[in-house]
Amino acid sequence: LADVLHLLGPNGTIKKVEGACLAGRLPWLSDEQAPVIQTIRANNDFFQQPWFDCVEVRRLGAQGQAERAFAELRLLFEADVSNSGMPHAPTPYAFIRWFKRAPVRGDQLERAGCLRVIYEMPLRSTEGVYEVIHLASIVCRHHVVPDFKTKGAFYVNAFSPVRPT
Image (tube, rainbow, N blue to C red; front, side):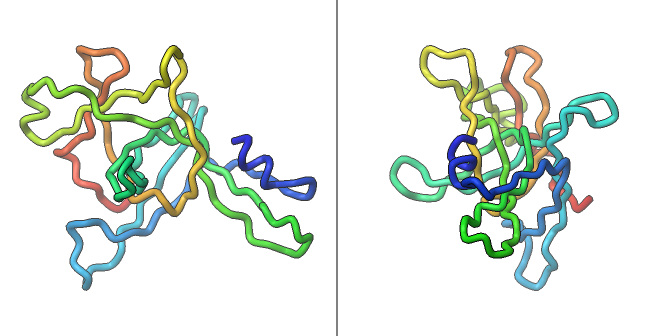
C-alpha cells in the first residue's frame, strides 16, 4: 500500500470500493461465448459479517512464466495516481492476501480436483503476505471452503463452476 500512496503524491486521492464487477473470458468458454460477469467483494461488514472473496490472479512465477495464483481480496479501492493536475480516471486496485499451494495430502477432495491452499507467510512472521495489484490482473472469482482438519487451510472448490452473478 505504501507504493500506491507514494504514487499518489500530494494531489492524489483514494476511494474505498466495497464491490466490483469483473468481465472476463474463462478458459472453458469458446470465443463465440460472451464474457462472464462476476461480482467480487471485499467488505469487512457485509450485513454484519466479513465477506472477502477468493480470486484467481495472473502473476509471473520465479522463471518469468505466467502462473495460476490465488488470493483473498481484503480491500478494493480506486486511486488517482496522476500527478499532472489534469483530470484523470481513477485506477482500480485490490489489496490482497496471497495463498500458496499446501502440501498434497492425497485426500478425497484433492483426488477430485480441488486445490488445497494455505495463507502464504513470510519467514519468521505470523502475518500473511499482502500486496496491492491492479484489478485487471484478477482473472475470476473462486469459491473456497475451509479445510476443517487444518487451521488456515482451504480448498479451491472444483465442484462449484464459476457462474455469472
